[in-house]
Length: 366
Image 1 (cartoon, rainbow, N blue to C red):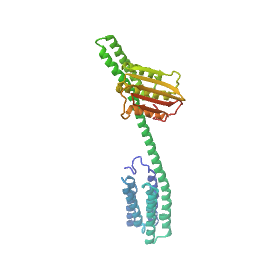
Image 2: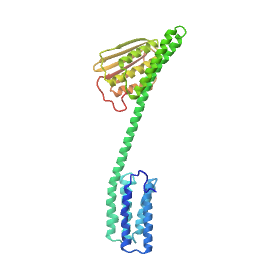
Image 3: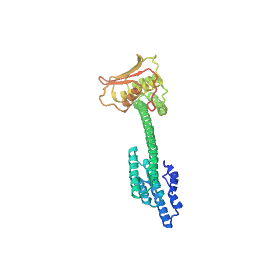
Image 4: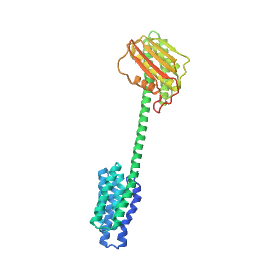
């Protein structure tokens, strides 16, 4: 049978119990009778049960009842054994670790000291009783109040660290979810469009339909690679290639596309990745929801910032932002940029990012 719960933080309690040996000084030096020895052994058993039992108690109230039991033993054995002071010392010593604040610990210490004083007066004990049961118990208790407070502070710090780790994991899962949404949403839209086109062409133009099917296969393979990259947080294709792919996707959907991308714009890797994902999400929304006839993509540099504009002449939208657009806005704002959406006469999405290297917090980089 274990004296303390498994992985207990109170392993010191096993070694502290040896101080209870003072309870046997009087019986040995005063040559107690067998009856007194019997009560001494009985008190020892009661002490061990109460002392180690409080560490197994399933509630604070029950643990404090064990402390009260130790105090009662001290009162009961005071007339017969000078070593009864150990009961008061142990009660005062362990109580700081059973409460939630220094104030509660001092209240218990005051209660123990009050019982000690009353016991001293009622049983007419000498001054040494007050020295050991009163002064020594107070010194030990005050020291343990300090250590107990440090333990509580360490527990709070540990819980805070665990919470930070949990939030970091949640942020990383959200990052991966946003990336997968953007990557798969874009790619599946292209595959759907090309598959529908191939289905329409298969009877009247088998050669063109076969070409579209081969492109579907190529896009599917590329999508698998992109999903792996998204999970690792990497983007290797680049913004120029992303704009070219967006132009192809829009044209496949039957839109007239104008793409104005300044070749002199040099983007840091993080900004380029965010803008690439924004192009994917925006083009996917145009294809799926806009019912537009034309779309304009524009990338330019002005006043130390990069400006990306995607405008279509579709239906426009006044509904709340979806997950994709919300994720896009979070990425942009993380880099100190802005995202504006206008929905009059179609939809115009404008993203502005500063052209400087930015250190992105853990979990925020995409």
